[in-house]
Image 1: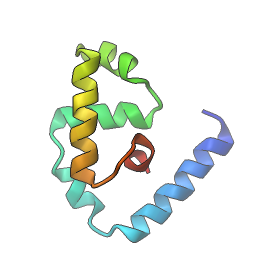
Image 2: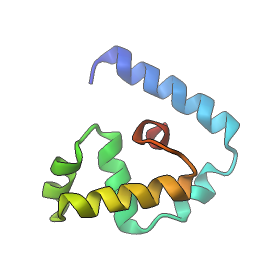
Image 3: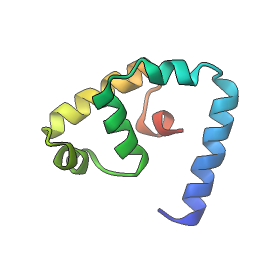
Image 4: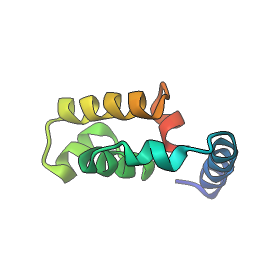
Length: 82
């Protein structure tokens, strides 16, 4: 990830945190495996790479992603990571 994109993501994360005071509460609703998937998504890994690292099927990773988005009330990976 380039310096520019990392800086942009950090700035967007700060804006999102300012607008969502209960972000920590939302993250605590995630299961341990969902947090693992989200962490790897935040590091820029694709579903197939996440599946390989966690020993899961790619479909399982996508299902975890859908659950994460619902719990965080977001509609995309980009929204979830910021």
